[in-house]
Image 1 (cartoon, rainbow, N blue to C red):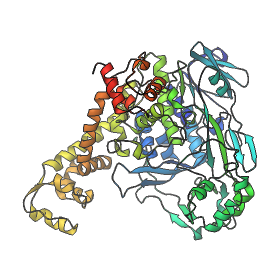
Image 2: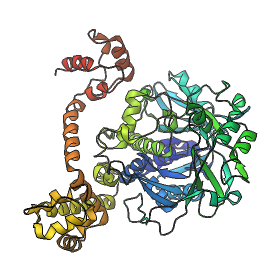
Image 3: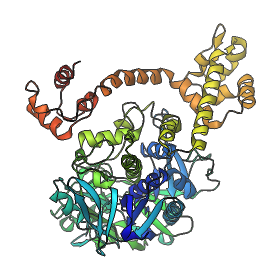
Image 4: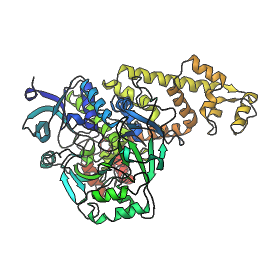
Length: 625
């Protein structure tokens, strides 16, 4: 059947990171899916930095992979450098990150999507939504084509009424060289949605041949690089490209300040809020006026290309100011620009208008994912796309929604924060946002989530088998260490060489292995332990799991106990028709917030800003508790 005569199960609007994961998840769950994007050449385009992962974001990529998404695999296949960040800290903070080959990243994503069954493609721009009552039934494109669907996922990124700013100049666009998307916001507002404006920015791209790297500090990848995906189809890097670090200076800052009167950020042309944790260079020198320099990370855009990304120099200042200021940075004296930095304003829809499934409360079978929900970052977008794709496919099959709890994954924290608290500035994930971060590590995402995904039909049998083997091997090694006694005359020389207290009587190796002064490799190199590992063919990933448990078992148990206590409140459901206005004994603010957000559980209600512990107690009484 042709496009005009087909009623799709799911239409995904937008081919960025959210749209790509949404389309893959929906199609892999058996839903006949159509991905509509303005440019099939720019699927999963890295609009900003050429990198995936980082603090908390690396955990999200691992979770996407554990659930059966594509981001981890694509990142591994197109990586040019791998780093495990925060390795000097506890395992809750370890965060994988890769530099990516920008062109190969988009190409690999497209090829993987093309090899996905049940997935069709169409290049056009959606400028209208088709409703029947409070239900979405399809979309309308710029070509005037109406395409019907049982569910629609909007992943429009920065394209909704996008406006690009460079100094005094402004022009419509969703990304440099690409036009904005119009019509969708207007249709959503007509049916009752609230919307707002947000801002983000991007640095200049320059010609690497024009830089003097001898004046910069070289940043190497890890000596023994890992990878994102738990599947064996990808391999760790055997060669890597370096990044470089340099600094701004007071002279650079003065040159930048000379353009502030022409900056859209400071002359009032940009009124929307930008990302707090990824500010523009002008914002940094304005907010941190006492600092005489800021770090810049010089990141190659791929294996072969000479294009370089100037991380830390995001700006919307006039091009002549960008040019003068950057030339005063060490190593940039003769810089040639490929393109100037710019800021972009775009529409977003406050995410308190969504359910935890990412379906909108106002319109049935309509889902939002990515920057339309007020987030920033490829990883946050991809996670939402994956969950929206899963839930759209499940919804049309009349199956229960798929929700990840805060205690089960960073994806759960991300979505719960958005739905429950909303956001008035671009939301970015941090480890500090997760109250159970010792449980939600990057190394155990498969153990946490693959079984859940397998049960709904997304994660493969291979993924499940690998996760089970890893978990079993890890437990086996921990039990061996727990049961193995060591005598003082054997272990004391090892303890002494590692400058930790000696023992006077036999002791279980587990207690010794838990000492922070002892690297776990000291334990695994003990002959009995080493022989046990070889005999049982225990993988390096399982050894890491065992190490984390041995070193942090106290923290892990404490967090598990907290999860169990909170789960009691998560299990107390609030009826969808409950009238919060009848609760006269709670504050007016609490009543307003509860009525607007409509929490599904007592625990969710307790997380809403403006709802106090006493308000929760009143709710518990009304729920018969």
